[in-house]
Length: 97
Image (cartoon, helix red, strand yellow):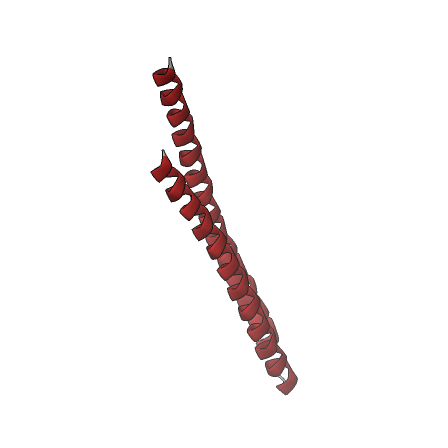
């Protein structure tokens, strides 16, 4: 009876791990898609600002670019840290079982 219960528990835990891994992988793919959308929007903004050629437009574009790059990199670092943390928890839990 105990053996069956332990086997059932391990099976459930493995299913949860697999589900979480699938979720993390889909989350990473979604982040890549958002990154591509961001790049496309940013290129459109750049094109729009540079087509309206003036001294201030170029300066505004550079400031926007710097700010967006900073914020994007900050968000990427935060998400990557969370994903690493979750993967670490998964590995630790797998070692326990």
